[in-house]
Amino acid sequence: MGSNHGNYSRNMISQRMLQCLVGGTLYKVKDAVCKAGVVPVKVGKHFRFNTADVALIRKAITQELQPVYKQIPEVDKAWLAGFFDGEGHIGLSVSYDKRGKNQQSFTAHWDLGNTDVAMMERAHEILVRLEIRHRYFTREETRTRKKFWRIQVSSYRDVAMVCRATLHYLTGVKQRKARLLEAWALDMIAQGCHRGNKFDITSSYVAKMKEL
Image (cartoon, rainbow, N blue to C red):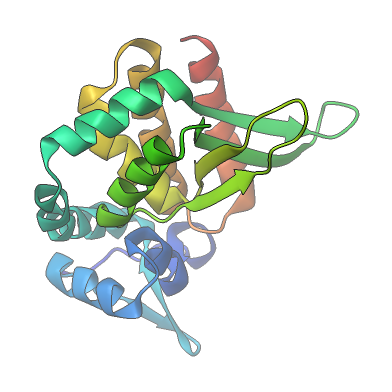
């Protein structure tokens, strides 16, 4: 299956961005592209992919990840969702300059924190088995607060995966936010490295989240 390659600057993404989508390994990218039947375009020394093909590649990747999800008992995903429902935070924000006009950066929030190390260790272990990359760290104890463990998921690929894995078991506003955050992450991947488009997309999703 070929591609309608269109305009290079707007409609194409790099192989590196595809690597981000499937977990950072070149082998997985090549395998997913092959399964999707997508033909890359060589631009100089590098290969590029049409953004219209991202949906096909994403479908191939999803099929590839199904065995990973099936290896995790549903009770573990339900437990993670329940723990996150009570102790986690999910959201999306855009920061502006001092005048409040120019967009400076955007941040996705999928955070989980607790003082119970056993609970946090179990959450960490489930994320590892789901192949979801995350940051796991501690905030040391002081005179006024207990030692605190925290998990952060931030990359587009991993935000989409953790939302997808727990969505069915979340409730209320958290579930609706997770659905929006997954859609945002996939849209951001499809946009590649085009900063302006990313800010436009993120602003629209921030507005939707504020309505929840």
